Structures are given as structure tokens and as C-alpha cells.
Length: 250
Image 1 (tube, rainbow, N blue to C red):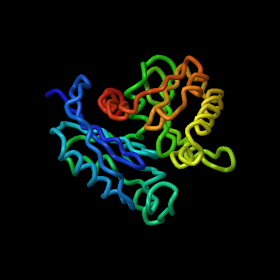
Image 2: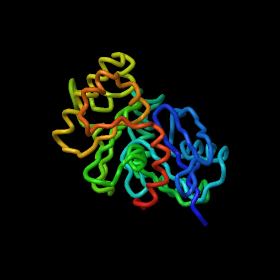
Image 3: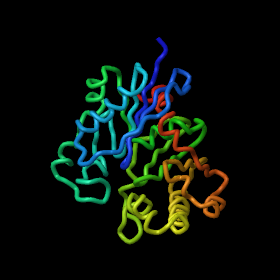
């Protein structure tokens, strides 16, 4: 039977899902839910299950979520441990609940189909990369996501979002939605360009894709100053990448 893929993109502010055919063709329009807080693991599984019930049946599911994911288990997740969403108080009981949580197994049990759980920027990257050279993906939304691919092969994940940056802020805080709103798009876009220039010296990518919901917020002036190897990408890759991910990751 040709696979039909349910893809779920879990963000700090919203969760969306859609279903795709074996060639990546869209079989349904996306459905969305506001990310509820506080958000223990089983509550997120319940939201995913609810979204799946609103969509055509699928034979497998890809879930992209923020944080460090290894082998379908959650090592850490930055937003879902907070009481009322990003930049609110971290609840120790949520940190404990999420640590080493078997997300893939929980989703498989709830939906009754095989599940692949990855970092959301990694899923985004599978929807974008060409498979040639070193390609990096940065996603801008509630915070900063990242993924690196070499000749189409996903590299071990690094949580750049948690690295300290200017003024003691992490990259998540420095480029996240809260700061974009506070600064305005023009000032925030200059920050994005500064970070991109700094990271290029570290990764020396052949191509950089900038995606996520806030990529469209980058001003035309800032975008024009990126190098030719930098490409602004559609946020829809966070869903479409869920099909290609099965070709490479498991």
C-alpha cells in the first residue's frame, strides 16, 4: 500500500497538521489548534490525536516539535516546560515529565500507526534541502530552530537556540517572537542578519534556508544583504518535509 503521511508541526504558539500522499501531494488542507499551556506530554499527544481525527486517515505520522529529540525520545524541550508558554515560569514537574519521554511510542499508541518524531527544524529541512553539499536550515518563530544536512544526510542535532548570545540572551530569546514584537521588524531583521553572518563563519554552508513563520517578517532591505547562498523558505516546508523525512530517518 502506498504510504499516506500525517504531518504534525508543533510550535510554541500553534500546532497544525495535514495529510500528504506518497508523492508529497496534499490530500487535505491544514487544520490548526492553539498550543495549550501548561503542556505535559500526554496533553500534546491528545492535541495531535484530535487534529488527526479531523483529517483523512493516514498510514504513518511525522511529528516535528521544538527541542532536542533523539530516537523518538525527548531529551529536552524549551517551551513546553513553561507554565503559560514561552518566557513564563519553568515548572520543575514539567521538566521532569518531558525528560526522556518516549514521544514516538506515545503517538504510535494513540494513533495506531508508525510515528517518526524529530526536531521541527529538521522536518522543515527535509522539505527544503537539495541533497548537495552542506545545507543549513534556520527557522524563525517563537524561538530559533536549526538543522544541518550534508549531502542530504541529517547531522546530529545541536540546540543552537540555547547557546548564549549578546547581553546574556540565548539565540532563542534574542531572535524569538517576543523580541520581534518589542523591537519591530526592521530592528529585528538587522539582528537576524547579524546572527546569519556570525553563523556563516562557523558552518561555512553551501546553502542556508531561512524558514519558519517569521521568515516573512524579514524586511526586504535585510534580505537583499544576504549572500546568494541564502534563501528565504516557505513555512509550509514544516509540513511537506514530513513525507521526505521517512526516506532518510528512522
